[in-house]
Length: 159
Image (cartoon, rainbow, N blue to C red):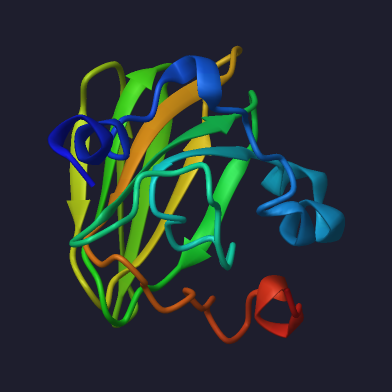
């Protein structure tokens, strides 16, 4: 392909995106507090979506945005193969980390960022009255689907 075609294949405009409320529906089916939506730009992220032809092909990382309705949460999960970044664009969220029996929490707001290391359980809760919007970057084009703490209700749920 020529330069124009190649460059165009690397563009994902907001106008051509849609929020996918189905990507994590299996979690919301267990408990509505887990309801959230992913909008994919580069690759499919770590939600378990197998493919999405409407994204820029991932070469080294994935990039998406995530909507968390008021009160919604992304449950504690762990990535064993990849660093993950949350960048808050709008709203207030509580970030939660767990490792070896220790828990850490922090409130994050607009333009705050956290880089989650490999092997640390991480979760996020929208503590605001309106939906929160975050960018999510996963440092692998095809990450392993995350797992949940053994005693978490989602640990027994199959996608």
